[in-house]
Image 1 (cartoon, rainbow, N blue to C red):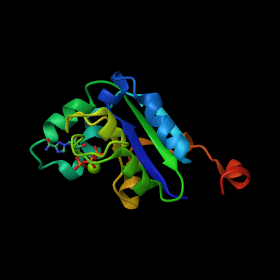
Image 2: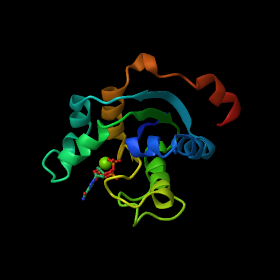
Image 3: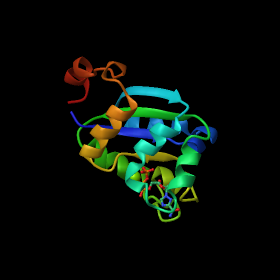
Image 4: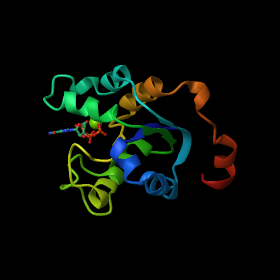
Length: 148
Ligand code: RTP
Ligand code: MG
């Protein structure tokens, strides 16, 4: 089953959007299989955003992610990587469609509330960076009887 890594960034946590964000993914039908609120080390933030290391916004991005706690999650379901990106919306909240998380709640590209893996391979890398396999739960029994 496909998995994606979702992180509610410090602004999403501080604006009280954790429940709303979880609700949207949950009601879509995806399954939450791991979650932790945590302070992020500089090392982890830099590894997570390694692909952006040479971009001008890299320094500010890392400082922001380590500035206050985030909620790190793993979600599972058919097509969850691409679907979660649609639910999240475009990187710049001003361009994000209404009805998406960023479109409904954000205005600033540097404070866009939430991260979602951009491809299946990226998701695998990010999940192993942020979670131990033992921190993830199985929905196997429930899925057989309820969802599929
Ligand atoms: P994310 O990785 O956080 O889920 O966001 P994304 O895929 O939609 O966007 P990405 O291109 O991966 O950029 C990562 C984060 O860097 C910040 N950013 N700032 N021009 C800028 O100032 C700029 N561009 C990107 C955003 O916070 C973006 O989420
Ligand atoms: Mg990205």
